[in-house]
Amino acid sequence: MGKSLLRLGLAIFAFFYRLTRGKVGGNLLLFRALLLTTTGRKTGKKRTTPVGYIEHDGGYVIVGLFVVFGDANPGWFYNLRTNPRASIQVNDKQFEVSAEIVESDKRGPIWTRVTELIPIYGKLAKRTNREIALVILRPAIA
Image (cartoon, rainbow, N blue to C red; front, side, top):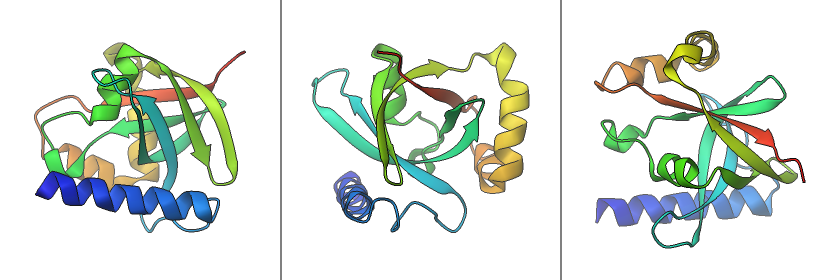
């Protein structure tokens, strides 16, 4: 029941984000959000999820921190690990991206910047024993 309600809530969020071109949902109280559309690794279906982001080095860093299920990465992370091609909508802009999972040896400065800009991520990360995944989304080159 809980997962179904969560999916419904995310679908409603995405609907209004698209409808208003990010005016509703693009700037939340604690962070800015984009819509990430990945291809399901098991189903092959397109999945759209709102995620918080920061801009970084010509791309967007998203954080694999799923508040409701703190000890697991969100599904989109596994989808991107299997297929790094995705699409995003940032406010009124839509485009294809290529995802790069940030490896442990490169994550320090990026994680520091993420937690400076979105302090709640640092607090939530303390509630789990895993390394929080960081993914950089860069505009895809055709």
